[in-house]
Length: 155
Image 1 (cartoon, rainbow, N blue to C red):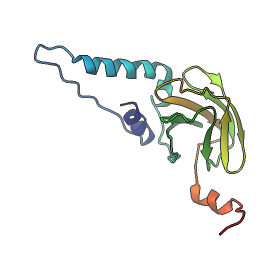
Image 2 (cartoon, one colour):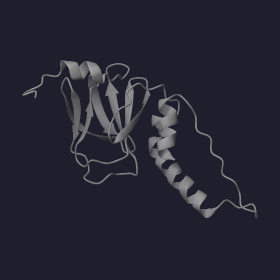
Image 3 (cartoon, rainbow, N blue to C red):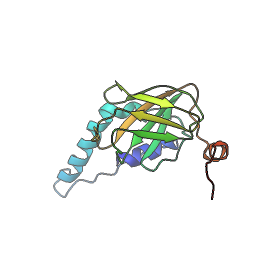
């Protein structure tokens, strides 16, 4: 459900839920559990999709994206551990933080990637959102970056 919300925000849409009551008019326990978990996640991460703008960055093996202005929100679904890498971003990143806690994240950036380090070994949340403050509207260009990157020992 969280991934669906993020996908809708990325593409400028909205997400409608259809939770049907049981025969006695109550909401099923499983629906309540799921909605409670999503609500808890939203309390710390709602900024990343409420009023979000369309988002061009789209490619990562373990994350999805949304944005608001010059802030790129990287929603990490498959936590890789203490280091997270985002490739082929055209913008300069000014700062990075874990959205739900506002904890600053150390990072280094070169022409091909942003490498965020010092993160927890275990994911802080089901989907952990990193907020990258950029110098302009976040853009990614895989083909341009791939063509510019020097290659050693091509076979």
